[in-house]
Image (cartoon, rainbow, N blue to C red; front, side, top):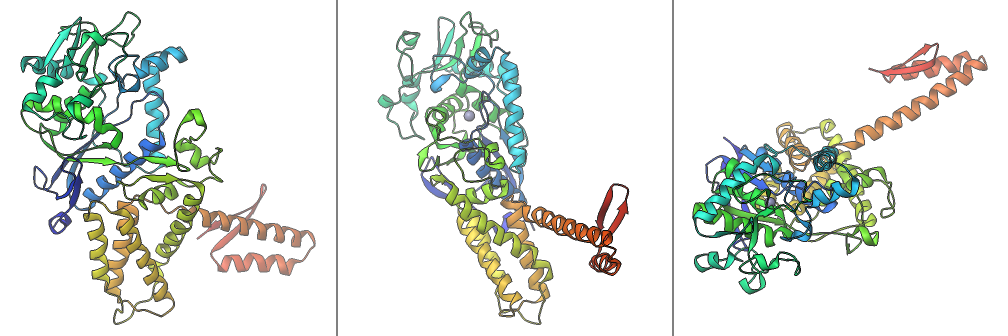
Length: 492
Ligand SMILES: [Zn+2]
């Protein structure tokens, strides 16, 4: 039987602001859409936090036996500065500054994004669609919104009529904004007068003469508004009503609010059953900003090449640190916090490595099935990873008690115990055991030292000592080989 049948998930829905029992649209299947990056600069650590949480949710769904279609888009056009309806396209601006093609900007930072996610052991999504790959579908959706009477064209640009929509719908239902406060940032000097209401947002923008990224449409040569791509690509790949839509909480307004308005206009119903939002990430208690120097790239954490942290940290330590906080809480990144996480992570890895060598008894003094239940209950409770981790540390305590003969476990229970620890630590949380590599580094160092001592013994014609070193290493399964380039070793 699939695990999901015996695990009732509860998800905090940002729309209802309550934890709700999760029921997928199609039994045994999950459709999940997460707003991806705008690829105009290096992957941002705050975004990595968001995607890492949804990676763990994705991993847990797979562990439970769901068939998951996980769609995470790449925004490669249409996202203007300051999330506004006016101003320059973020990608086009970077292309102009670096004197390269916009698609070179897209390629460079898409590669960087994938590279970072790979280093942090992310599973790839099922589909990763791009905005520029779906211009035709976006134009079709604009036509539909115009037909429904909620889109209007002015001077080659098309806007969504928020005030008209709000007569029969609730604009602000997700973000809690009142319609009078839901004014979209618009530069006051250019283009402002185009719109009927300051709340309206762009579906299609006519491109200025300088604008490189442009496509033909019934209204003008131009480009789609940023909010449109997600409505189009989520409905194309997941249907007009799907299970989960996620993103950082800064996307609630305007982005997700606009998505709901567009999708409801076309389908007549809510597009998403469960809206999920991750909280902010701070660095040393403050907002990250390049301008203040309080800033770090995900890559710089791994190399230690930065002025913000005391040393380098492994990707798994960063992952572990992220998962020690609830995704709906603010997370504060700092050296002290990462060092504490590193200690915990190493303790966990050490315990897991010794699981296979535990000796078993005729009876268990530990209730493994109850402990296992609690691990699942933590994840079923809106992916409560910090509580899960506290249970995993209880598992570490069990391991140490068994080692010290203060507790006993049967062979049958040990199989369940080891499988559960491994499943949550590696499959669900997505951690890797870096410690193995570190310990083989240590062996390298020790063997190199013995090879050096043996060489000195041979130079001093102390044949007994040099033979003893060789033989005792061989007894430990380490074979020395003397060659022209010096002595090397292999392990059996
Ligand atoms: Zn989006």
